[in-house]
Image (tube, rainbow, N blue to C red):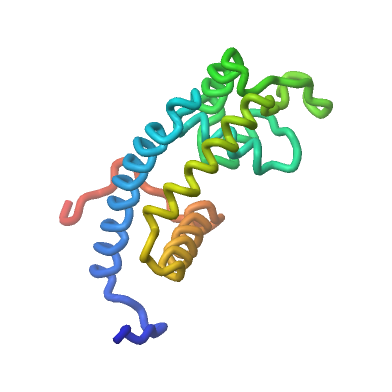
Length: 171
């Protein structure tokens, strides 16, 4: 039997512990996903990071400059620039002039990049099917919604700013 959800406020200590546990689980899962992704696509000339950049390019209806790709991925411009610079000699992406900005070139996926991305996506689908087998889609949907809500709160105009050196209790 499932517990009934209410709109009653949660115990702050329980909520804080649950939040901390979720964040730590996300950190661990992120590391595991990156390592698994590297293994999954390594022979395609990709890493998880390169695959993410190709995904950001593939999902955009228009070519984007590095700064926009970085913003869409939640990464720094410098990190994405390094990846793009590494991917160009491998023939995965190329730069084209940006009619809106002289210096911010547009990053375009090459045919080789598109082929690598398609192959990576096909592998990911088979891997995801095997990994998620037997688990209810509703659980993934609920988890995704919770993560999107937390992302909205972190990005929102009233997001609490983490202090660099918060005062300790009793100090």
